[in-house]
Image (cartoon, helix red, strand yellow):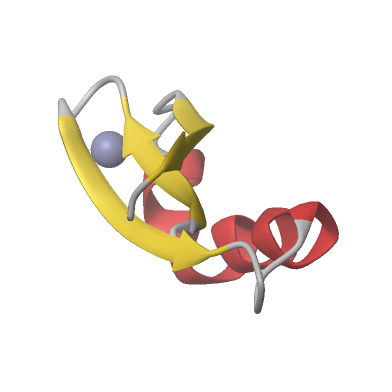
Length: 54
Ligand SMILES: [Zn+2]
């Protein structure tokens, strides 16, 4: 299965992992801006990376 992982470079931690089947790129962008708005507001660099897990 493919996952999108939301990672904050400033906090140096994974904020969440989302199955690509349920969260496409558009949804992830939306989710990041809403769910992790405090990081974004603080100027944190929130990245989305893709990885595969069985
Ligand atoms: Zn952060």
